[in-house]
Image (cartoon, rainbow, N blue to C red; front, side):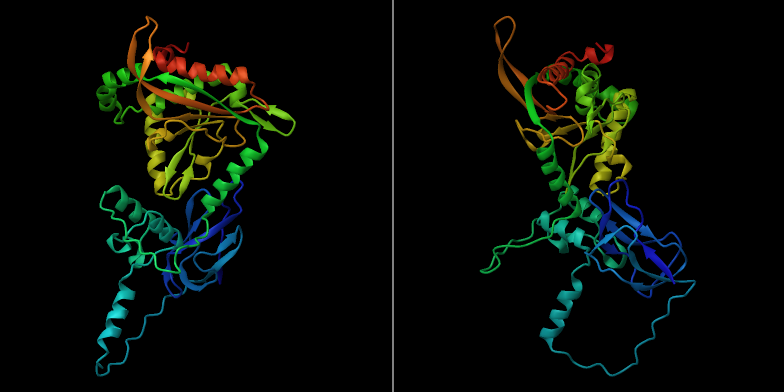
Length: 396
């Protein structure tokens, strides 16, 4: 017998949840064929069969937690799946109509893993409307996300009967880690936030003028995030403490710029990292962000892609937030919060009052290593770069 073992899950990840068995006991599998799906606090990954054979035993049920090295089941190496014998023929018997209807109702509901079921419930979807593409008619996460993205999703009717006014759902691994890390940031860092506002008129004009040519040349739309990332890197170079972190009684200054971009998914918030972003073009930044966003929703990001960040940018504006206080992504010492662009009456240098497209900026920082002067000044540099985008091209 060959054991099916939980593989190494990545840096600082020791536990996972069995999300979905892709094979049943007695089914044949090929070497490297996916047989079970695990959900960790960061990503969903598949465990492949190490050999050709048959699933002899499934030891851990869907929804149960397992640690690295745990035995998920056993494979009978080289075995061949037994063909099921045809049932003996017999005269058909009439069954009660009510019983037939009940059986049909149960069998018609598609199979789902606990993680997919939670995703359906969280979005209040009607499971019967979701096309299934998985093995044995299972609904996958991709099926649910595609259903939501298509605009065809309709909320399932909510019926609350007496005695069913509450529902308890176990927190996913991702949600548990989000909760733990947010509380850890509040408990360990001396976190403060400084605010400013930026006139987005110059960036919007530049984007409007060149967006068609940019998309034609690079095959990707020119968004706002690349401007903010370039502005942030410029500020971090001038104020390195915001790009540093505490390690014991030492301050580690990073001479590289790995910017995390917060991405919201149906399962929770994830922060993939753009590495050495100071060496990337704006087209490369925009393309990478689009790719991260798609793969984050599909649960296809790797562990490495979500580790090693030195600074984070989060955009609450996509949800309509006008002002918020972002929480540090520990052990980082700085995080920038973007918000909605809103036209407001502004007094110009000549005394005139003009409606301008304004955005509030918020930068939270760890006051243990970042002084108020550095925090405020670095945010001002971001503001200046965005209000005069030529600074990003000239690096001044």
